Length: 453
Image (cartoon, rainbow, N blue to C red; front, side, top):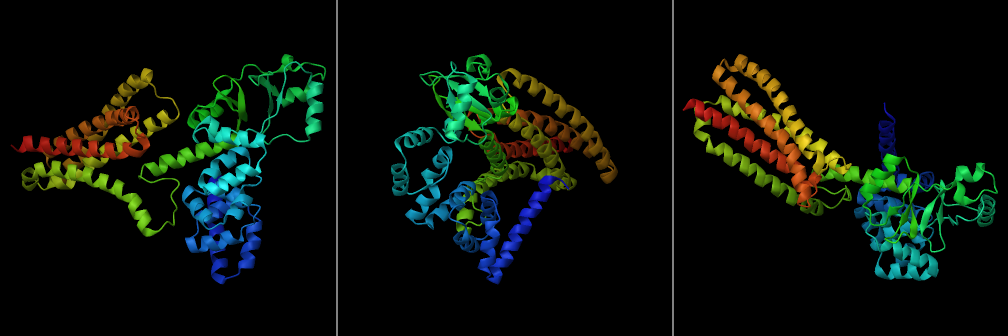
């Protein structure tokens, strides 16, 4: 069993254990068990419990952990938990959070609480927080933490070491110190390994890394994640348009981005949001799903209308109705494979105008090859099943046409949706299914009509 599966099983067992304790009414045991959990584990537990049990557990969570837990839970759950807390509890929960964490959570707090938190901070920290909050949440500026250590290029490593000893601690995930000039413009990085191993009398300028470029604050979070992955970064500096240092992004922030993006892609395919509460009220859940069901109904009606055009043909040969799902299903699966490949490529920045044509040609050949193979195989099955050579040829041709069209649609649809500013992960599946169903039925029933007439 993989490590991931083991973790999922452990989480499920934990939820079951807490549910039993809550049913037994042994709140003291629940509180004791909660003290052993990390805030992220508590957040997962809260998301996994029905609302009544969630509220009971939340009352038992340590005040020291409330801020960290609020950061970890999804938006729906966080909104409900915040409503259950008074202003003084919310202010206390915000204490001890990092600047980037406060920037994430304060927009969800009541305005009076946000003002109170800002007023309680010294001017320097308040300006840092306001700087982070001025950037979109899904940008490098929104991800960054302003807790950094900067040094000048014209001092020695010995001076840097004495400076670090004087301040007594360094921020978490620090693998480099950031080198800036007197105008706070980014110059490079001083790796801790060089700081500890080189001659103390060496100047910072002699050993600093000038090659690693800083990340612009406006860079989308997705691109930041790709950059960290490509360069195996632990942290990276963030600068404004003029190259002045604003803060840094660390790998733990990037892991959150990658996880959120994966959840978003998965949930979007069903028209849902990764921030939805699994135990939201029935009416709320129903309302959120209505739009996607309505869109699906329209596409289904379109496919049904196409079938209705060939009602007389189906009446003449009932076997057509039996075989129709095969044509639609094969096209849908083939198209989904290409669509998934394209959505991943777009998300990873691997698809561009320069290579889109090559992808189109390659998927056309893949669709043609798969179409020929499966057309022959299905034709043989139909021939054995119905003893009808004409029907076997018709379904073979329809399968070939639909698999080729599915491959082309799988490439074209996400590119078109991206150009229109629509998330391919959100709408690609519905559009593709409509195309493969309509083309599959048109090809199959159209060829059958021509043959019968």
